[in-house]
Image 1 (tube, one colour):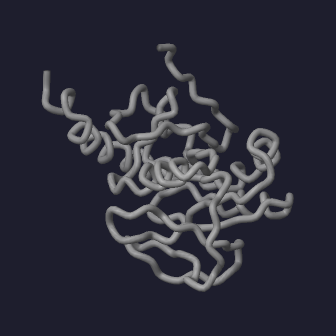
Image 2 (tube, rainbow, N blue to C red):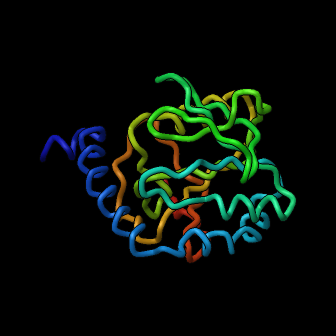
Length: 200
């Protein structure tokens, strides 16, 4: 058995490279994906309610959630974006609406100005490299989202996490580490996907 099979971290490194290449191809091919994503806003509200939806400003080949966020706002939801913290710290979320000013953040990101109100989101729309049918998410390795969920849920705050992805980002199985947290759902251009958790 190879080291990658024994060590989730090593398996993730190999998986990330292939998943990033795949997502780049999907982004180039599916140019209307963000518009299609926004058509499912009502479905999200039916399932997760009207509250504060935190998204992300897309970088590289990430599927943009901004059309979706604007549609959610039209339907009465509040919106927010994260501010990327120092390594090892959880994300902080500030109120932000599509069209508001953005400041430069680390890793080529954009984020709300620091004077925008802090908030605790009810739903987080998370970017990713890949996902599987059990709802496991392959991120970039920084652990920001898993750490953030642990802190918020540990403080008693109930929230849902929805991965945003192209349909073609689904893999058979994502390598899972001890601190990973599964998604509550995945939203793709074709609709909302509920994970199938294996029975214990």
